[in-house]
Amino acid sequence: MLQLSANVTTCLTVAFMFGIAAISSNFVPLFFGQKFIAVCPAIMVESPVIYFAGLSTVIGTQYLIPTNQIKTYSFSLVLGAVISLILDIILIPRYGLMGAVITTVIAELLVLLYQSIFVIRQKQLAYQDLYSDLIKYLISGVIMFILVIAVKHIFSVNFYNLLLQLIIGIIVYGVSISVLQTKAFKLFCDLIKHNF
Image 1 (cartoon, rainbow, N blue to C red):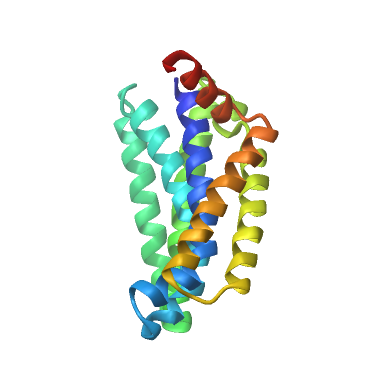
Image 2 (cartoon, rainbow, N blue to C red; image 1 turned 45 degrees about the vertical axis):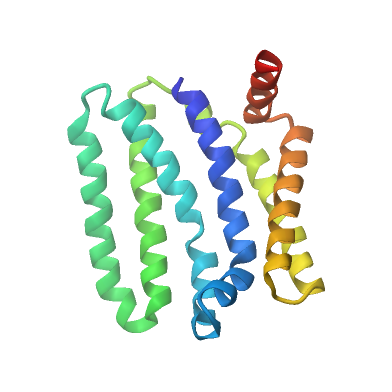
């Protein structure tokens, strides 16, 4: 069950990660105004947190907590907080917003790595169980990102362009994971067959 949850979570979070990064330069001026345009690069850099936090949540809530390994789960969160605090003190005065963003990405990555290594060392799960199909999702995400960015450069910044980017992103990502035959796509097909 954890393997399936990790795979579906990876599928969705990688899509959101690349999707948000791709539409940020249209989304921010439309919903927050031109004054906030400077946050677009920060959103792009921080987007991997969606994947890191998503998968660490799956490991924590579906494995560590149910198997009564609360200390390990809590330690991973404290580790992330301490690393975040230290890096914030070092990076924010020098790099401002981007320093805070980089700190968040590093802290979330280290929480995920700590939890993953702990679970794999217990031999309850293999590396492949947690990260199966990750390369396929990353390839799909990159393809989606490139095409969505291309659409942004063709049309002017407006709500309809943003909507078009979202639709193209969903279609491209869906086609890509179907061509690559990911487990999440197969699960989706099985759900459709059994329910319709």
